[in-house]
Image (cartoon, rainbow, N blue to C red; front, side):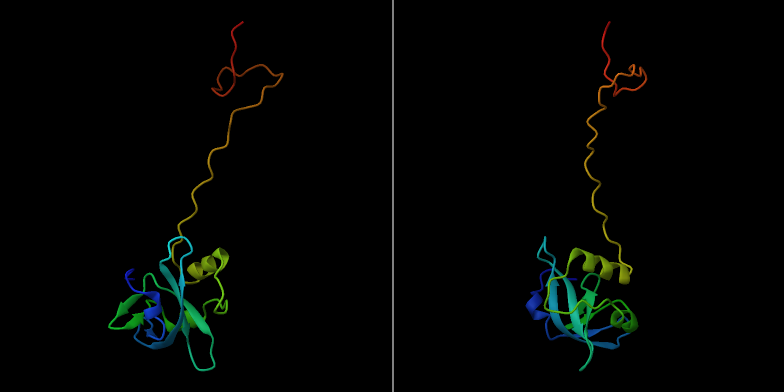
Amino acid sequence: MQTDIDPRNLIGRKAFDRNGTKIGTIDEVYLDDATGVPEWAAIRTGLFSRDAFVPLEPSELVEGTLHVPFDRTLIKDAPDFGVGRHLSPEQELQLYHHYGLDVASPPPPPDRDFGTLASTDSPDDNDPRTPHTRP
């Protein structure tokens, strides 16, 4: 999605699925907490319906309408977290999985192995982590 778009300008625009079928109207836009980039749109799917969250990446804004590369059925079956509230990382993860999108796994924790503790056992000459002393 274009990142130079003001998210406020997305609200009220029509959204269509990958087949060109109208999904509804963009009700709210959710920004990434870390980057401030628009990440999710909540689309009002009908008069008495709920809002469905759709990812803005890989969606495209074409001639003033949002084109979402998923089927309407999948979009309507997306997890419902309500609108007007912050999406937690766990909720975002559920949405990514629902749409089959890859989520970058968090980096591995730093190596905290500071060596072995001294013990009464004899040192293992083949283990480079074992401290050695000269007689």
